[in-house]
Length: 167
Ligand code: FES
Image (cartoon, rainbow, N blue to C red):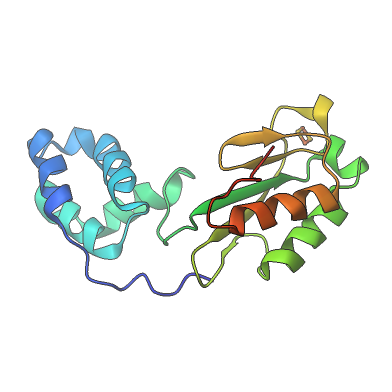
């Protein structure tokens, strides 16, 4: 599970983002999106600086960040693995896939590995039910999965070259 989000954060990038929006409160969402793109997630120091730059209460910023699923308050893994456990995928064996991924990476769904290599999430329908069971690995949709195939892909991601990833 991610726990080292307390490293010092260089706020130079954020100052550039805030400058582009000239402290406009109406630009909060785009500022948060751009800050997340720059830092990979939204560290507390970044949120504090945004609140200060926009003259808004920090609680209000947190309210927005926690409302939208697109924002992350914790550092995420280099590789994002999402497996589907929606109805179509479930009847075609997603439970075994979830079990095998959790065992292979050593974390539960919703967690990030301590080396920040992987974040694993379970979602409920990826819109590709015809290919069930389905996963998305680093934005690539992979269908007709078996536990063995997914584990082999995770192995591929671990290799320095990442050569066998999501084929
Ligand atoms: S239920 Fe898994 S893709 Fe729709």
